[in-house]
Image 1 (spheres, rainbow, N blue to C red):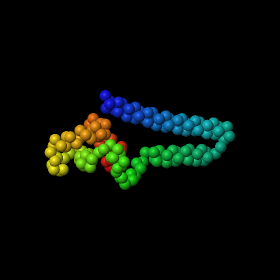
Image 2 (tube, rainbow, N blue to C red; image 1 turned 120 degrees about the horizontal axis):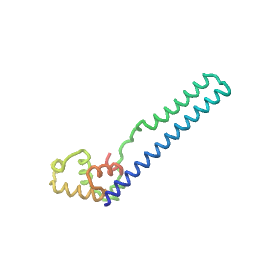
Image 3 (cartoon, rainbow, N blue to C red; image 1 turned 90 degrees about the vertical axis):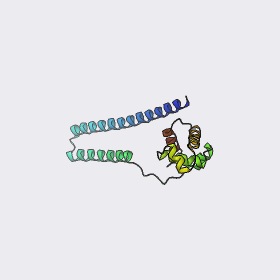
Image 4 (cartoon, one colour; image 1 turned 135 degrees about the vertical axis):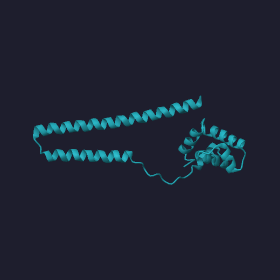
Amino acid sequence: METHRLRHSSTRGLFTDMWRLILIYGAALAALAFLLEWLDFKHDVKHWSTEFYITAVAIIFVALGIWIGNRLTAKPRQAFVRNDAAIMSLGISMREIEVLEMLSAGHANKVIARKLAISPNTVKTHVARLFEKLEVASRIQAISRARELDILP
């Protein structure tokens, strides 16, 4: 039941963010359309020079291009710093962090057991405890949650 609530709340947040972005872009396009119509009206009324309109439209589109470019360009990520406070508050052990790192690398339980020199049942126990501590139900959710908390890079 708890995982269903977590999945539903993250989906709701995604749709809210998506609608907010759509409304912002829609408002920006509506404002630009209004501005272009206003400029056309001014052109008919005052007979401003064509160079003025070309310059105004060019400035608008350059500004819009810069703004969209900044929004869509990925920002460089700073160096990863592990969130020790989150690790302490969740009670995650160093061995569980090693298991979590191996999970994020895509290793199976048997491979993790071999690399850490522990039994596969011990790996299962660590994974189950990680699921409880991170309040997730799958490996993918555990990795995602650990990245949100800056436990994993």
